[in-house]
Image (cartoon, rainbow, N blue to C red; front, side, top):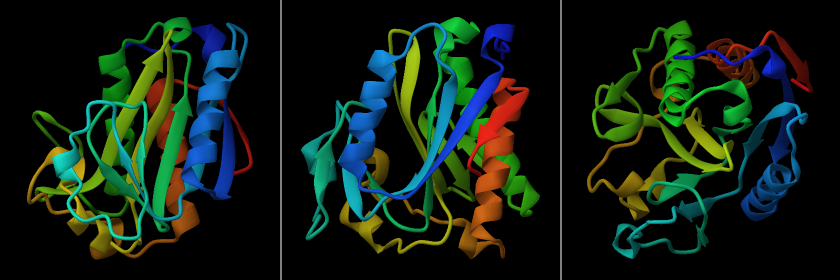
Length: 216
């Protein structure tokens, strides 16, 4: 993995709390379109009210029975997934081109960040070939869905911590029929805010930031 260059060592963290998906998505788009070569990279942390999001190439047949949960078509990669309270959603808004990092290395760094956090709680996270995200004993605990525009990233990762997993049964998660979804609660005790802090530290370390500021 290539490290970021010295122009991009500062990461600003924003804690958004519980926020509706669509306004946050549009804010990410706006931030990405307006930023320039001097804009500080940011990491947004948020929980969303219940929502299904469907990636650009998402197939309608993977949305089985959404019921009263809205389905939003978005501009990230990947298939359908679910967001809800008790899930850490992290949006790294990173200038990859400025930092000299390729997309594959970026994805690997994000995945490795989650693996490191799980290890702190005695949980072994794994990658599965051809199935992006992180798994524990074959069950998915974190998903990734990214968009790169003009060398800059938005969208990000969803890490299941302590949530109602039932809505995942209403879809084929990430386009995989029968995929079982799990969460940190099934394996370990924790403090939610502490997990967020570990994730921020891990992402900053994996991407080579030496200065992290913000409201976490």
